[in-house]
Each structure stands twice: as structure tokens, then as C-alpha cells.
Length: 139
Image (cartoon, rainbow, N blue to C red; front, top):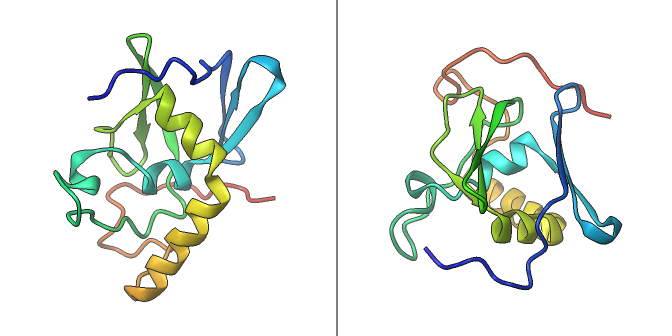
């Protein structure tokens, strides 16, 4: 794994808003990123989703109502999110979280295009979610 980029800001505060299913990350200087639980789940850095090399990525789908049950710090460099569908193997480094926040809109649009191309949905089907999750309130 690559080392932490020295220019990446370290979060000052990380808040999980369970009602809206949003993770809010505050950085020095007032910059804030708001990332949905679904967004964080579909952009998991885990090997099962990203593969072990280019072209091995597995599109994550059916995650619209996934929630984060808890957030665990990993050393001084990352977070682990424990999701309501049982997924917990991705380590979200400070670099990754910052880049996800900075490029959220472009990444989300590309994800929606990939879903459409593969005929998949954000909605959970019986095969896509292992534990019942209560819906997040979207505003």
C-alpha cells in the first residue's frame, strides 16, 4: 500500500448522520465533504470489489439503502466502515477519503453510467443485501 501523501489533509472531525445516511468529514480550514453510506459502500477499496489488478473490478449494486453501523479507526491513517450488508473489509485511507470527497460528483455520475451499461440497479434485490436495513431518509 502506498504511503500517505503528505499534502492530504487529515480530517479534524468525522460525523455519521444515521438519519440521512451521510458521513460528514471536516478538514482544517473549513473544508467539509458529505458522503452517503451508499457512495462509500460502492466505492469500497476492498479487494473483493476492486480486484487484484486493472480490469478485475466488480461493480457494486443494490446498495441504495445500505447503512453504516459503525466506524472504526485503523491506526492514524484510515477508517473501516462496517456496513449493514455485512461488508467491512475495505480500509479507507485519508488519501482515499479526501479524493472521494473532492471528486464525489464525477465519480457518482460514472457509477450511474456503469449501472445502466450493466443493467443493474441501486435498489436492493433479494440477492444483494444479506441483512434487512431500514431505509435512510433522503432530503
